[in-house]
Length: 317
Ligand SMILES: NC(=O)c1ccc[n+]([C@@H]2O[C@H](COP(=O)([O-])OP(=O)(O)OC[C@H]3O[C@@H](n4cnc5c(N)ncnc54)[C@H](OP(=O)(O)O)[C@@H]3O)[C@@H](O)[C@H]2O)c1
Image 1 (cartoon, rainbow, N blue to C red):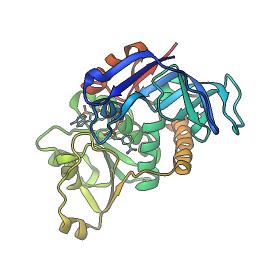
Image 2: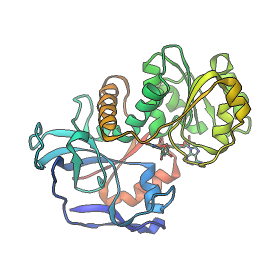
Image 3: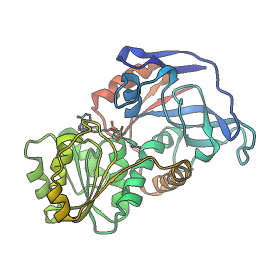
Image 4: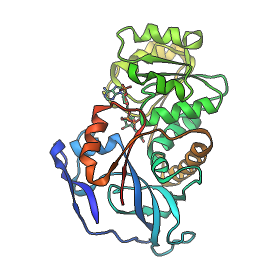
């Protein structure tokens, strides 16, 4: 089968395209013919060997998948060859992928394969952040940092759907797209006066909830607008794993700071199901562009250019 893979992390040149042995479904697994698989920022981390993601190959990249069932492994029931499914696994940038049956779901009728493939990693993460970890309630002032990213586009839509008053941050060129997702206002997170801009944009100058995924100085800056008793969840460290935290302020303000964590397989399965359901009714997965699998390298270049809103999706066939 054709696959996009790396032999060793460490250099952008390590991305390969070629024929690899097709996987066979083991116990509890479903073999899926891939129609669409999103490209995640973590795929670029693996390819580069950054963020503690080094691998030795051949390692096929990709985690999200939408496609059709080919066959199932021992002990799997409830799937028929040809079923349209969406799931979360590893090694989806290929013509075939094995998916744990627990993480493989019927594709919602409202989503085609390309848009369904945009949901699992980013939608589940945003769902966990907005629903489970910060418990967004109607009327909450929710600040979504990097609102034009894959996680951000889902977080804005989920929070808006829950009745929150959402403000996003993004590069200026992406602000209109973020507003269209439901944000009341959008602040350029590259401005030197980002804190003052956020105070102007947020109702009452504060956020009850912050969904953050950039890290570094932006993490420290946005914390300055977190209301007393506010909740912040860190979902990623795109720019920098370190940030400055004034412990006295944390103590006095009574903030709750959460990390997205590594939920176990049962929790991931539950969150995936719920994120898919919510996405089908309340969030249009934002797909900026599709690339054929054969052009995976161009898709990686596009992801690293960060000149788009939402997801890049690879397609096969
Ligand atoms: N822990 C988990 O389970 C989990 C799951 C999913 C994602 N994540 C992490 O969460 C982060 C966001 O994921 P994602 O899929 O939404 O990523 P993404 O689609 O690549 O979006 C990231 C956004 O961050 C903004 N940004 C701000 N500063 C940046 C910088 N210095 N470099 C690059 N981009 C910058 C960019 O938008 P602008 O152009 O508007 O600045 C970009 O669109 C990533 O670090 C990812 O690895 C973690």
